[in-house]
Image 1 (cartoon, helix red, strand yellow):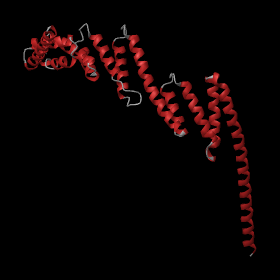
Image 2 (cartoon, one colour):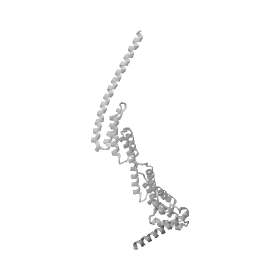
Image 3 (spheres, one colour):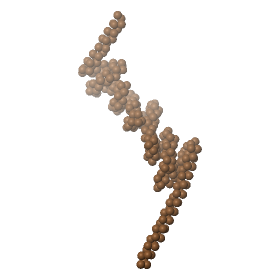
Image 4 (tube, rainbow, N blue to C red):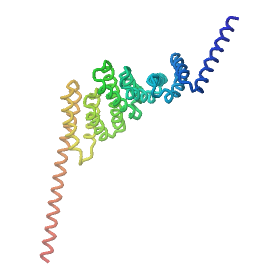
Length: 293
């Protein structure tokens, strides 16, 4: 019997709660709407709290309740994972209520919302760039904040996400054996992110790509590509001396290939010179015959 009584009371409480929510959604009484919204906020009923807070901006405009409504609405959207909207609301709070003691917190939370909304590395990274800009704005506006270390760590994580996306795009060129495109793409990563943690892997892929380009190049480009690969191997060895053994082995093969190619060039040039000489002699004979007729 007690069990049924508890269920009955729970049902009545739920009906009462839903009834209050419905009444508040139809009401024009600012205080009643705000009180109900705060009750749902306290109970972590984010969607209902948000719906009620959305009814209040015009009703509380210019009153002392305006900052509270915007601040709690932003947090409710954040907890409900509506990060873009929450970030926009926190930013508005920080701008509109510059004298409020919660201004720094709002600016920080705005940056955090953009951070949370950052897409996975394999997707478009516009949201990640927006997040970095937002975090940097916080540092510019609050250079002495206790949150500076946390913000810097988050910027570093987001920057690495951009680095890794560029690195993976370059690696895809290597996977399909488009070595020329791979070299350009990997070198762009180094140029854009000179302090990247992926530098050892990038050097490795550039070396392998240049090796393949040199060893399997067409005749007209072979000398240039072999020399370029050898030059890069020396830079690699200087930058990462622990990898010297493997790099020296590759450079030896490249050097032998270059020697063979230079010998081949000499042979080709000699045959070319011989052909041109014979062609010249033939033309002279023809000219002499025509003159003696």
